[in-house]
Image (cartoon, rainbow, N blue to C red; front, side, top):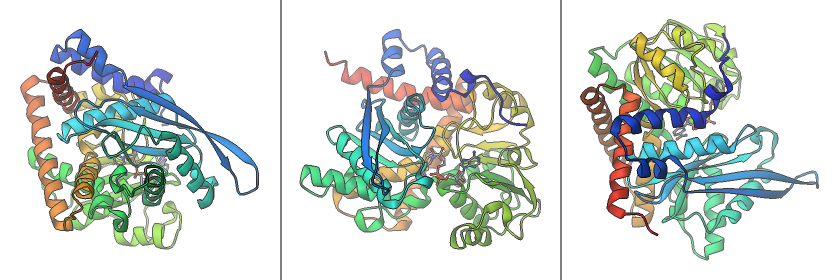
Length: 423
Ligand code: NAD
């Protein structure tokens, strides 16, 4: 069944707001603080003129939203996608504020996006879009202001271009202006794997909490990009059985489990379509794969995959959100009724921003850590944050998502009260 839901349900900004309102209400947040935290700090729209390879000019629309600088500089990815909207970027910026607060790192939230289809643009065109977008934002980004990172449709190379452009404008190399950079430009060991590793750590914790064994535990992962493919590989190596996978081209289900290294080779080394994997199982649509039998479901692709129209069909015991916003607000109640243990996005995928924080720290120190050190510190942050969210949920009688929001809002509101409002 396709995700047919009301337009309001599918507006991610409204989805984010709905959760914020429930959590703020439960916390008894005073009205002034509620208003302060509900709205973004700043929204910037830029029109990016770019010379295309065919000699013509095109103007692309880009956004950068700063949601909060209360606990530190803003932090958040840059998304290149044809369906980017300001509302989506607003929601993602707010989620970054709550995510950084859940894992207790000293950042606020931001997000950026450019409306473009990277699959239809050459490398040169993408570089020119990135550089002009960065140049337009020079005064608003920086290690102490706003630190971008990769997201859908952007990668290490994009971050290298942002870093170089910013550095040319400020006249000195400033590696800490972005995270998710190549290792040779001040990137951190473990950053590429961090979000997937955080997903796995969260799943390990949930299994322990529920008293379920890890070996042979059946996992379905939607999305086979950075988050999905790394989650699949790490979980496969750790003894989980990956029984379902999907990317934009479609899905596969095989109850015997996939040979994930071979699947990675097929998709990445050979550049073949995921659904054509020769040792694959039953072909399904990328959405249908979500509703097959499994113990753990990891949506790690895009927003609005689990809605009021299909949440009843989720068969998993644990839902660990690798993507941002894969579940709509009305679907939360259905999952709760079904007793699904939800690890919400602002906790489940926070491994990425946690190691981004480590990257920023290392860049500013000019001293770099071994991969083992990075992974150990990440494990510590993820495990501790998981425990805090679950404890909060139990203490306040709310689900894990609302608990994560409450914990985050409480932390940001507390910092805001300490700072006071500058007038
Ligand atoms: P990516 O571009 O590397 O991969 C996206 C994957 O999703 C690809 O395999 C693509 O084919 C697939 N996909 C796209 N549309 C789909 C659809 N409709 N159905 C099924 N599959 C589809 O992106 P990523 O970095 O892996 O990010 C994935 C999600 O995780 C996004 O929501 C992103 O905001 C979130 N996230 C990413 C990070 C990170 O560190 N990369 C951190 C936190 C959250």
